[in-house]
Length: 264
Image: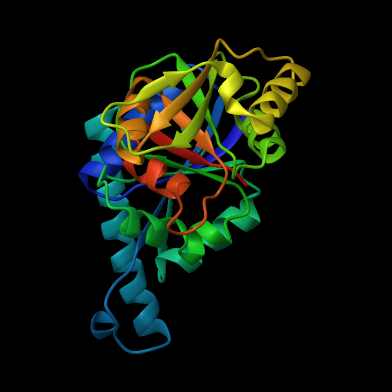
């Protein structure tokens, strides 16, 4: 089973993430844990010693009630492997500590689909994402699909892409497509012959075969990040290596209508 930590807040992004995680569990056997961090303003903190401990217990109780409401409302078809973990403090620090101490395979978080490349980069380059000890899934939409895309390009290390994606998805029942992106300012997205993909595409195919999986489709796309991002909407998720800032790769992930699995 894939040991998974899902961050839950009382908002729409977490609602979608909860439902998508339950859907994911139909394809991958998840050992699911839920975490919530209450991050109060410094002005709200009161006293020290036992006074602060009582205050933290009260704040934590609020967090437990919020998570309980979310779980009761969504009523997901995916049993939790333990009680929700409620922390009070700095969100990044508390989640990072839990990820490291709990030896998780996957971290999941909701991310509302805002096609803003700079904002997307700020999120995935934040300490939580840049230093996470495991792969991270940003849930953008509740995409009901039985296939995943491995996003390949000239700038992508095919070995990392395939080997790390198989660590997460290798035992799943998803079908796989390799989607190779070539940037071009076209009026419309063009689908090219597989031979146009180059060496990285051939290596990705060979590595996938070596892992006992066969790509259902090899797709070479020529167009803009916006066009490719829209094309990806038919996938449950798109698996990708971490992109460089202001690259076409990063812009494509920012514009992806499918959820994004960042491999580590």
